Length: 282
Image (tube, rainbow, N blue to C red):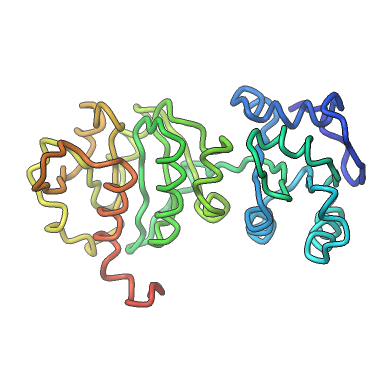
């Protein structure tokens, strides 16, 4: 994978948007460039620290000139430099151009993407994984990753052509959970085979579901929760791979729930017996 991002271990001040390093980082807005380089951008001190503490590889740390002399930022920069990352100290104009929004975070990081090999997924009895079929909205995906982290799910599987898990909007919405929740990806056929070999319950949400989502015994073994596309729901090939089809009852005029909300409702019901009042897992 090629990239014009600076060679490891250098500290450089940059004030020009024409700088080739900055041009390369700004291209990370595009999925094609993220895929080509295997990298992505994370904004904010918290996200950068979360990533490093979870063992993610940082290529470049970027921070505003106004952060010079800030003990926390300087300590973070030294830590990243020791790991072989580049340190870019940039003007507010450059920082805003990279973030593509007003009032950007003072610290950003370019990290290497990380994917879990589906063949390595070997669930224990109480494990829960979430599978998402062709999720389109980056806000939904980011919120689901954050919710999965909070509920103690073991990971997320992206099925088919989904929105990019490492798009800036998605990463923002995870609030750092993207660095804690394993992500895998499969096409429909691969997932269908994977689901049929799952050693426990495969619960798919479906408008034609005959079972109230609160009724199954989710403690009988590992659970794979499959959520359908925001508009189309689950296709036949995926619904047929489920051991049960569940449905969330509704009383109002709305004909459906937001995908992230529906996933959260189901996930917390599945994890009910594993969560205590203070949120700590068993």
